Image (cartoon, rainbow, N blue to C red; front, side, top):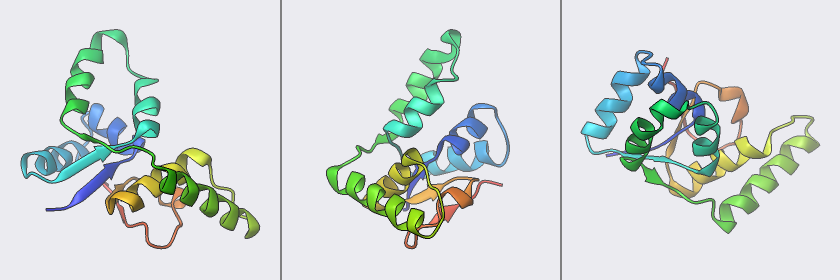
Length: 128
């Protein structure tokens, strides 16, 4: 059994029924894997959800773990942003927070934006 943090790209692909995202996420849920989200993913996703679909997505999110942004994760996100900025690589606070939550939870980060997550030790999974 594995743990996965679903990035917003994975959630959007799933919501639009894109394959293989839809099938793989459903298989992970049915297989008993730990799938989670954090505040960043939830906020970004719901920013695009229309009123008629909210109940459906409320139910979907109830099937997932909600992983908080701990103090340790917030600290790590800031350190990564600082470290990469010194190398000339600009990372966003939301992306560093998502990566830090994945690291904190020892979860694989499911995303199709690997350039946003160059941190050593953050394991990525693509749905494409």
